[in-house]
Length: 339
Length: 294
Image (cartoon, rainbow over all chains, first blue to last red):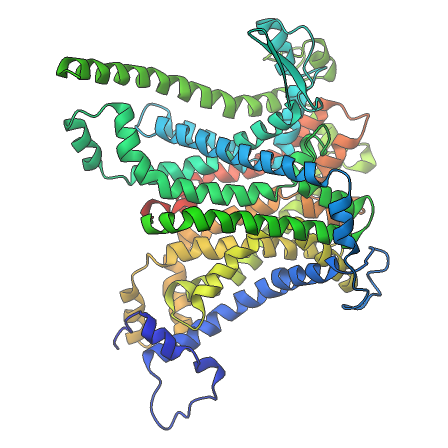
C-alpha cells in the first residue's frame, strides 16, 4: 500500500466525491485517497453531529430569537419564525449603560489579557533554569488556574473585605491606611501621589487583578514549554558575542516567543471578553464592573427578556468578531508567517 | 562602548537579573500559595477568632475547630448545608461529561489528524470558532430546548451542555497528540489486516492513552468548576445542585459565617487539586503539546 501524498490537488479531486453517487465497485477498486476521504467523513461525522446539535443549532436559534419579540414565558408555545422585529436591538443600543458597559468590557478584557500574559512571561523566564523546589513551585503556580472559580472568588472576597479582610488589616498595620479600602465595592478611589490627586476605578482594577492572577498560569505553561524548546546554541552564540541578559532576551528569546505570545493574547482576549462568572461572583457587576456578559445574564434572569438577551449577546459576538478581524488584518499575516 | 564598559554592563545585568529572579520567584510563591493558605486557615477557625483578629496568619491550638466542615457536609435534614449530596452530583456530572466528551471527540480528532477528507480544514476551524460565542449565547436556546424535553434541572441536561463546551478543545488537544504517532504504525496494522476501526481501537487508542487521560482530566476540571450553566439550569432545585452552585448559594445566605463559606470552598477545591497534583505532568504536557513546536 502506498501512502497517498498529502497535497492540494488530491484534495480537490477528492472533493466532490461524497456528494456523488456511490461508485460502482465492479469497475475498479477505490484509491487510497478516496478511502481516506470516506473514512475521514465517517469518523468526523459523530463529532460533527454532536457539535452541530448542541452548539451550532442553538447559536443559530439565538440569532433568530434576537430578531423576535420573545419572553421566557411565551417562548414555549412560540413557533420558530414570526414576530419579526428590530426592537431588541433598539432596546439594547438605547438602554442606559450599553456603551459604558462596552467600554468597561474592553478595558477589563485588554487589562486582563495583557496582565496575565505579561505575568506569565515573567514567571516563565524566572522558572526557566532549574533551582531547588522548582518542580513544586511550578505545580503550585498552576493552582489559581485549576481551582474552582467559585472557591477562589470567595477567598478573594473574604481577604479583601473592609471588615474582616486580611489585606485591609495588614494595610493598616504596614502602610498606615486610615480607613479600610472597599476593593470590590468602590467605583472610584482617590489616590494622592506626590501631591497629585486622581481617581482610579478601584473595583474594576481589582477584578482585572483577579483575572490576571487566575489566568497567568495558562500563559506561563505555554511560554515555558516554548522557552524550553529554544535551542541552547542560539543563546550560547549570543553569549560568546558578548550580549547581555537583556539583549539576549530582546533579540534572541523574544522573537522566538512572539508567535506564542500573539496566540495567547488572542485566546485570552476571546475568553475574557465573554467571561461571566469571575465578575459576577466578585462584584455582581456593580461598582463600575458591569461587563457585557453580566448584562446578558441580567436581561435573561431579572427581566426574562430572552429576545433582548439574545440581541445583546449577538452584539457582543459581532463586536468580538470585528475586533479579531481587525487584529488578523493588521497582525495576522505576520504571525502566520512566523509560525 | 569600550570592552571594559561592556563587561561591566554584562556583569551588572547578570547580578541585577539574578536578584530580580529571586524576587520574582518569591513573589510568585506568595501570590499563588497565600490565598489558598488563607482559605484553609479560615476554614478551621471559629468566626469570632476571625472577627477579633482578621490579620492573624495562624490559628491557635485552642481555636482550632472542624465544626465548620461538619456544618458544611452534614445533610440539610440535620441542619447542615448538604455538601455531601452536592459532591455526589458534581462527581456524576463531571464523570458523565468526561465519558461523553471523549466518546464524541476521539473519532473527530482522529479524522482531523489523519485523514484528508473533503472539508477537513473547515471542520477543525469550525470546532474552534465555537469559542467565539459567549457561553451566555448558548444558554438561552439550550434552556428552552431542555425545558421542552423535560431535561431542565436535570443533571443529564447539564452534562450535555458541558459536552458542548468541552468537545472542541478536546478535539484540539487529542489532535495535537495523534499527529505525533507515526503513520507507519497504522500502515503496519493495515498490512496485518486490521480495518480502520480496528486500527483505531487496538493500536491508536492504547498509544494515545496519555493524551486521553490528560484530556479527560482537563474536561473533568472544566465540568467540576463550571458555574454559569449550573446556576441557570439547576438553581430552582436544591437537590440537584453541584458543589460550585451550592457554595455560591451558600454565600447568599446571611446567617452563614464566612468561616463556613471557606470550609465549603476547601471542600470544593480539594478533589480537583488532588486530581491535578496526581497527574500534573500529564496535564501540562497534554495542554501544551504542539505549542513548543510552533
